[in-house]
Image 1 (cartoon, one colour):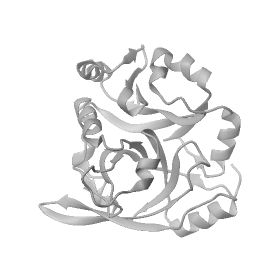
Image 2 (cartoon, helix red, strand yellow):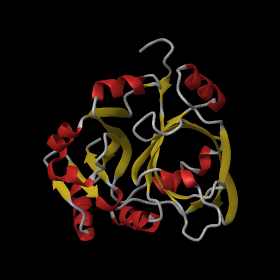
Image 3 (cartoon, helix red, strand yellow):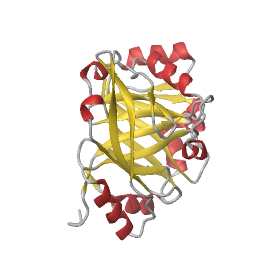
Image 4 (cartoon, rainbow, N blue to C red):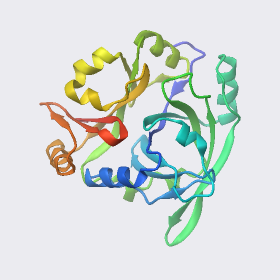
Length: 267
């Protein structure tokens, strides 16, 4: 690792649902995840979380009946659309990215109410986002000022037994070049990794399930999850009619409506 390259830590990954967040919520709940109550951002979007140790999966969408439209969500494609780094100093991250020659947006501060013991309290965040088009999806950094409102024990004991996020698979026409570009943003440790492949390798790894991901030059294709009762998750997926592939050491299922693959492996 270059001495000027910071250690990277995952904050969360984002699944963009556009107007179909209800369907995504229902699918993940049926798969055995605890999905947090709906959050309403001051920016106009809504979300749900699947909270896991070390990072979470965020479902994000735009309400159809909202007077405030978060156009950024609708301008981005449906699917795994966000890689979010956890940082302590968002303004410093902004300045570092600018120094790298990246195009970063101004720092944002926002909140959403969380119901806690029958009362609403604000979960508060600061973020810096890279202008879309520089990486496969939306890439940004986040500082949680109220992490105790997100990482709550009652939201992390998932009935399906999943405990964490292991990796995100990035598809690119030139995987080596993509890996070098992402390496500028931080060096991952052992808890989470970015994987890189091209479209041909994707088909080799996932077979027919590869048909359910986007057909673009660069995109986020699959999230690998640690732990879980794979046989039970497979039964739940079949009940939903989701395409799946069971191997001796993994389960892969597709979320066709959201152009994403979920891969389940042992801890």
